[in-house]
Image (cartoon, rainbow, N blue to C red):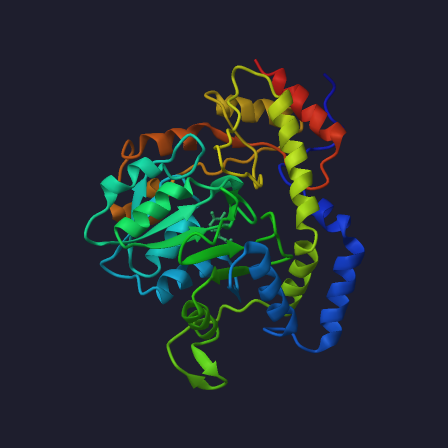
Length: 369
Ligand SMILES: *Cc1c(COP(=O)(O)O)cnc(C)c1O
C-alpha cells in the first residue's frame, strides 16, 4: 500500500474552523468592534442557548473545564475530610477538580464501555462519601439509571464531568442534567470547542447557579461588594460568541462524526483490534474513537511509519501519576484501569475528515499483522 501523501493527524482543528469560516470571522469582528470583552451579551446569550441545548434551567460560563469541576465541588461544600467517588480511567482534571478542594478521590474501576462500573460503586461508599463524579468518557453516556439510584439511596451529591459528552444522552436525557451539577469544557479539541479556553456549569437549582455566578467573579455579587472569597474564572466574549456559532451547528457536527464512526465500526476488521461498544440506552457523540490493542505500542509505530497519527487517552491513570503519589496507591490496585491505560488508542477523527483519508486509515489498520 502506498503511503498517504500527508500526515493524517489524530485531530485537525483547522478543518473545523474552515467549515464555518465566514460565520466565525464575522462573529470575531463583531466582538472586537463591540468594545465589551468579558462577561457581556455574548456570554449571557451563550449561557441561555447552552442551557436550552442541554435541557437545564441554568448555565454559567467559566474559564475552563477544570474550573467548572472544582467550582462545582466548592459551591456544594465538598472539601477536606470528604470522599468523592470517581472512575479510575479518567483525564487527570476530573481528579484535580476533587483534590483542589482538599477532598479525597476514591477510584472505581470502569466497565467495558470505558465508563464507571456502576455495580462497583456501592462497595466504595463510606460514611465520608459525599459525592459521585461521573465522567462520560470519550463521548458516551454512562449507566445513569444505576448511578442516580445510588446517589439517592445514600444521599450523595451527583456531579457530571461532561467535558467529552456535549449532547450525549442516556435514555433520552442529556448528560449534565442527571445530578446536581454538569461540568463542561470548551477546550478547542472538544466536540463543542472554542478557539481558546472555556467552560460552563449547568444546574437546575437557582441557588447553585447564583453561587457559581458570584464565585466566578471574585465572589462579587455586585461590583466591588464581595460576598465570598471567590476566584477569577470568567468566560470571555470572544469565546462565547464563537461558541454560539458552533453551537448553532451542533446537529450537523454530531451527524458528521457519527457517520465517520459508523464507518469505522462497519469496516474495521482486524482480530488484533477491539472496537468500542455502545451501551444500550446510551448515545455516543464520539469525542474520541478509542480502539484497544494488546500490541498497542507496535501498532502506534506501524501507523506512524505510515503517516497516521494516534494519541493515548490516557497513558498513566491518575492513581499512578506522580502528582497523586500522596494517595499511596500502587500498580495493581486498579487492574482494569491499568489494562486500559496499556491498550487504548485513539485513531484519527475530526470534522472535515475526507472519505479518502478515512479509507486509507481503515486499509492500513486492517493490514496490521
Ligand atoms: C478536557 C477535560 C477536562 C478539563 O477541561 P479543560 O477545559 O481543559 O480544563 C476535564 N475532564 C475531562 C474528562 C476532560 O476531557
